[in-house]
Image (cartoon, rainbow, N blue to C red; front, top):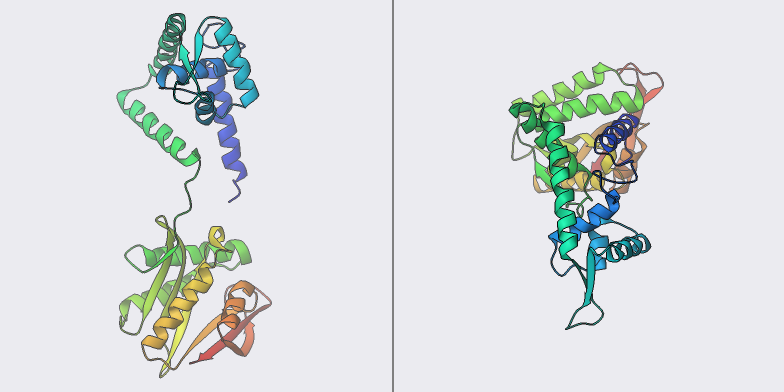
Length: 307
């Protein structure tokens, strides 16, 4: 998902503040003769075991050529030694000399003092908030794990309000439909909750890693025909097949509940949804002008599917 300009600006603003606060822009770091990158390499070697150049690259993201130059300088200054593994001569382990450990201890002490100076004016409550904010920022900006599986589940408390909210927000933002659309969705949802027949009616939520990605409902219609309602897919989930999965789940339930068919009401501008309906066998049977949501030029449509 593309970052918003406000988010980009906020991250860049914090970067400028923090790099100035910790003196990153100077040729030396923490008042010593070494740059921030060189100090970080010392840290990785000091805190690791059987450290190799590959391990330092994985931990820091440094370019291999740049790291090689850093290691040569540290070795030339007497801070670093290299030793080949006795079991695998291809591996070269990095270790600090006594002088290297002494140098690093001084750098680390100055860094601790620098950080303490930054947070010293903060109250205990403010320090707790800062810790939580930094932990959350680290979690959000870390390399994302493999995407969790998209799952479909039935609704639970909180989902109905989310359906109303997201319909109102998304259709206003993407199509300019006013609050009458949101009010209509709220009425549909209220009727669903008040009159729910769990044997013949259901609501599903598409979810990934605890994040809602979409919704759909099946409710009673006329006779043995059900109504498919409120199909929605979040912009971040479009292209993942979420809409088709929700529709397939809905129709599978309709068949098992004994309905003879399903009908739905949509708008001609909702091309992605219409493509799904056509793909699973719905047929367009009627259309008419619609100005219910404050927009002009809308065309409402009814689509039917018989089992």
